[in-house]
Length: 409
Image 1 (cartoon, rainbow, N blue to C red):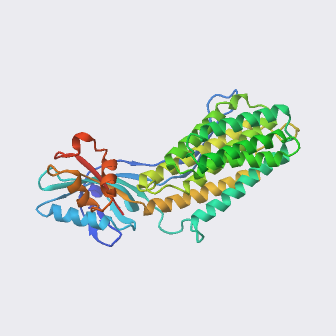
Image 2: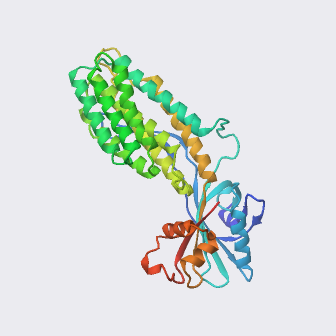
Image 3: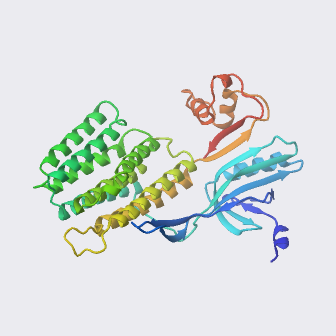
């Protein structure tokens, strides 16, 4: 079919509740990202890039309802879009698609026209990974298994000497100094400090009991995963820890230092997965929030695999050779894959972003009542103010044409 014939077809959207809409549309962009691994080698210019399967495609959507009934039609579309089930969309340029919207904006500033913009992501409908066990419990259990496996791998391969003990002590101190900033005063901070001291004591005896020492270090690494801080704050702390260890990569030359890097960084990624399973209320309110966590988790994991490949020696024939531990890395990979699958499921159930441009002057009370309803503790007003970053100048009056963000289930 020629492009002329294609663009003469109508765009149709069938929402989750079965209602079908045929709006006008504007030609927009789509994007495709791939799961890739990048490998760099000493003394070789460039990098080896291995490309895996593509990620979900994203489509920028811009549709228009016009005519004398445009407001009624757009309102009906907005109501149908609240249904959490996926859309079936036929796009003249891209064909049949199963998609989920992550944001929609409604613009009624031009009379007789409602312009709707947003982003939709192609979704798997059937044949995707399924799980019957409770996801949080499964992640918690698998995380413990990974932590034990990481410690066992280190203890089975390394008998720490004085230099190694100094490196372990320095790493434990760096981990604690980063993490303690997030610990709340009281039981949380005290428990974390005790874990740090227990690890330091065990490290002193690491030559005779390396397993105990590494188990205690893993406890320090994983503790911030369950701190009562936002998921973004916890991830930022973990990323900072990884960056500090990665900054030392060029100086990691001994077998023991390489296994310590594998244990520390692998343990941090394990903790990030655990943290992702325990968000604070509201952390995953928006689909974009979940997708951001997924992207960060996959990014640090992929970089970790590249780093291990860089550290690996040409063969395992020498006593000083380093070959990444298959068991612990394989278990960590399974954990990351399970978590990503679960987080995608969470994102499909998270609230969808909507936005409009105010048709007339208004205020936070009226707008909160319009989009969320008012409650005795004013929590919906607080949410509305935070979501729209309303400052003192807008407390009493919000001007016509102002972009207003709100969320629907």
